[in-house]
Length: 136
Image (cartoon, rainbow, N blue to C red; front, side, top):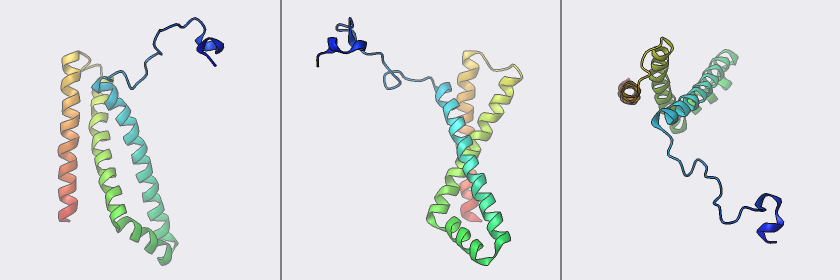
């Protein structure tokens, strides 16, 4: 079939297809907004794991032994690291959103500074959390 036989391609000629997200570079603020939503979902998953752990503790030794084994395995440790980093990022970005909700920080230089502050703050808090967890 040639392109002229398809209804959508009629009259298109040599024009390129409409570009999508692979072509554009999203601004850092947009990437951080998407990451805020992703970390919120990760925190919800961590909350489900916490509820599972509490219900298992109330259910008996067999149920608790399984979830405790899972959470203390390398997979559980990796999950805790991801959860901790997600929590620290979500916290820092949430503070920025509270400042924005108060009507401050909308100018481009302020937004750029708050982007860096959130990333640095989340990185430092995550590192402190990881070191504390390692030593505890």
